[in-house]
Image (cartoon, rainbow, N blue to C red):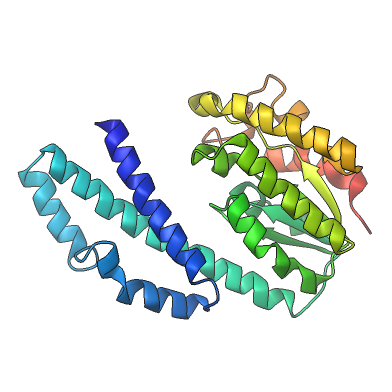
Length: 269
């Protein structure tokens, strides 16, 4: 039963992500207007009295079909909200990049997004281009938006969301390499930071993280790209240490301080 629910949720999430990519030429406002006007393609009831209706059905009937319907509707609402936030953040980054330049770009998902980089490096010309929930697909699509910043360095940390979403290591590695090539082709120094291991609750992902890091490290050696092993400090036993996380995935302030100390010698002036 759980597997069936997960499969249905993944299908709905994938359909929303596909819709987002197919309409990427639009602004976030046009995209959301189109998405909601086209909601019948997803579920013709999800935006009308959703909470009240689902609550009634869930309380009155607990059979598998109703449970699946509940999960599907909830997933769609969560995914559409996440998509709205993602596109809004991407639009913001794109517009801000036109207004100033920066020597250093921190590029990644929520682990990068939630880092206090300006406070950690107040003397540096640095911008944060992490977006919570992003994976290497999204990053590869939006990496072109860093060009107006005219950066000298881009620090990458990515991959855990891809692996959690079921993408194969070779798929993640391929997209990662495409981003590194993009930087080199535009005269930007890419710096790869190891994908972090996660805590014991999510430990099934750690063998995949290890495989990805091995491939990234090998590629970086071959292409003369700097590779930084953050795991040797944050995850010395191939598991994210409890003092560095509160949810076994995202980082504490102490973890960011340790991270900053590792990369500080490499930051461009």
